[in-house]
Length: 148
Image (cartoon, one colour):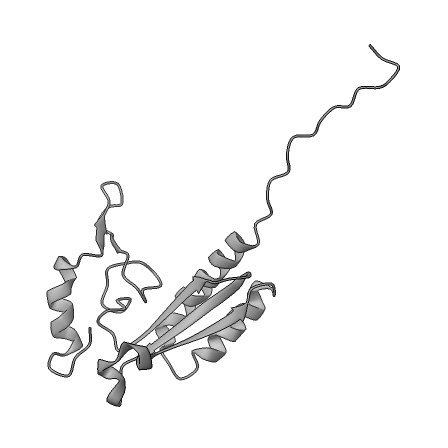
């Protein structure tokens, strides 16, 4: 969405109240949520918006218990080609949450410092859901051969 003709502030003033990704909840108070891509906190704020900011981050569950970290950077020649402006890295999800958070922070070095805490929270939530153990079935009682 970032273009050379409009600044991020102008884009945000347009998208702030009129985005198709906005979801309002009746019981949530004044918090407005959004489901746009590259938004880690899912809140409708300028700093968290993945459509407006030139640098954004997305963390999603991948195949075989992996986490896919996608970095978006609109800079130079890449601002008009989304294929060249994103970089996806798969991280092994079988390691512990701390090791995965360290890997994500290493990827985010010299990127956006304000996204490190939301990225760590998203990693912990995705790792917990991916490693959740299936519930055991109810235990069957056995009948003894001698009892009737």
